[in-house]
Length: 93
Image 1 (cartoon, rainbow, N blue to C red):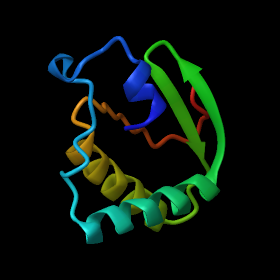
Image 2: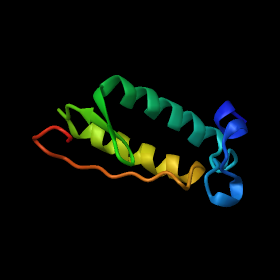
Image 3: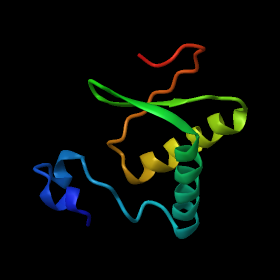
Image 4: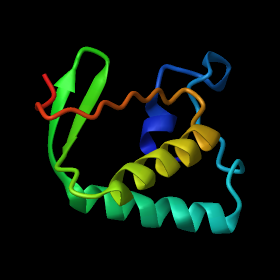
């Protein structure tokens, strides 16, 4: 359990808790790989009213596929996680 979970006023019954057993070892490894691959491609972040906007320069479809796969894995272990993606020629916000 990390410090956020220990110190959070939210409880598992609130639906705000990660299920560490939701991913098998191969999926957890893939999630870590995707997180690293996506993080190095992030060119900026912007805080929004309900989370963060991650900015990417999408120069190939691989990034879009990686983000979609990462969201899928993230939602399995963190069902409270909400994602929205937009492809635009303009920047977020």
